[in-house]
Amino acid sequence: MSGAAEPGSGPRRVSSALLTSARTTLASAARVLHLLFLQITGLFFLFFAVGFGYAAWHEYQAWNASHANGARLSLVSAFTLLFAWFGASSFWRASQRPR
View 1 (cartoon, helix red, strand yellow):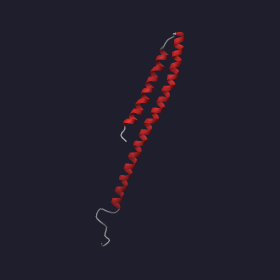
View 2 (cartoon, rainbow, N blue to C red; view 1 turned 90 degrees about the vertical axis):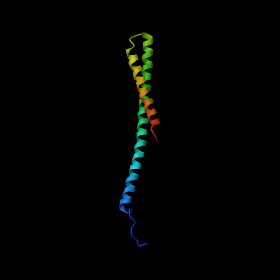
View 3 (cartoon, rainbow, N blue to C red; view 1 turned 180 degrees about the vertical axis):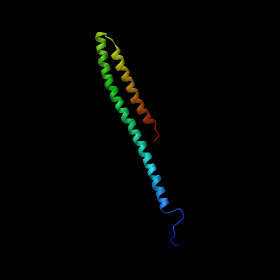
View 4 (spheres, rainbow, N blue to C red; view 1 turned 135 degrees about the vertical axis):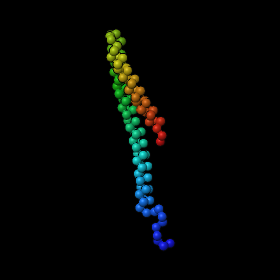
């Protein structure tokens, strides 16, 4: 061997390898961060759904005692179901993402 560099080696090959590894690392990190984002937002939506459910229970008790207008009960119940759906669908989307 005369010490000459092989064709295709050198700085160009190293930079290509570094670029490929950076893309792979960033893609993996982005996927993990997106899964974490979906799970955290799902958790917040479920916390709000529990809070709305608690309010709906109190509205139901007040409505049952006085048989007043049930508009507030309907509204709070609708928000409970809506936020529960958002929370569950966020966890569902996180579980369906390819790993």
